[in-house]
Length: 343
Image 1 (tube, rainbow, N blue to C red):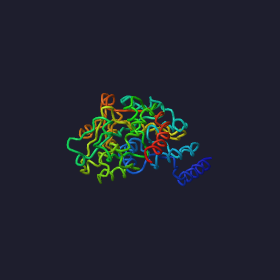
Image 2 (image 1 turned 45 degrees about the horizontal axis):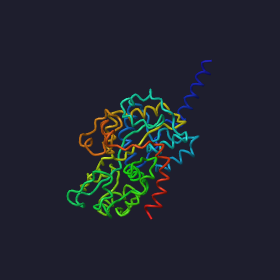
Image 3 (image 1 turned 90 degrees about the vertical axis):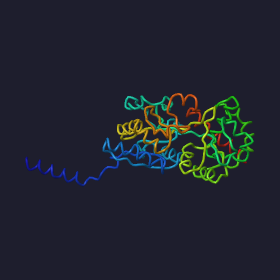
């Protein structure tokens, strides 16, 4: 009997020794590449692995490409956690691709700004703004932007750069100036048509935006605050304006993939991502605003326009559109913009 037991134990030990390491012994995070992946790795993933011992792997791609892939692989998800824009996150939710969140498992969520809770399925990770900005050395002395309406002023004629991949910012601003909002955006169409003489060029990417600003071809732009901060660090004299109507806020959000085999680890990753110290580190890398109100940003970062650190700033300086409305209307806006503004 003892010999048989010993033999069984020996065979078991041999099988364990030769068994391959299972691929699921890691947490897989779906995110954009480049600086976004590197920042998440440095601020979140390393801390997660330090606390849990579990390695993190990133898979990367474009926003819509990743959504499409998630739909195709819904029955066999490739990742455990997804980071995307909050309005595209609404599309993940509508497709049933995110787990409903148990907030009791996310104790750090109690200190978030209310705007961070994008839905019962996804949570804001950090914020940024799309807002007017200009080269101070290429515009007349004393030139400033106090309102979105200033983009229609003679000083901006033939100098304005706008993104063509997401025209929502200028469409929302025109609607507000016309007394409307995102949902009844067509009220702003007459103003948008009047803006055409101001437009010099459209940019297709962050890189193109930076090139146009650096060369001075479009010394006035509606641009991503993170890009402006990057160029300011390079010595380009840019002033970012927060118009009296507010700046259009963008929020990148995080959710747990429906069907993950690492549900508890995914909750730990989310909770660590919302930790105030991790938030401060992440925002220091990205040059953006934290979602955790207790995050202590570097004072130089905290004073930058569009980096909201108080409830009052969110109340008075931010234009926030609900994600479902933005996700539903963005294709409509892009079609209208292409046909009517870019021809």
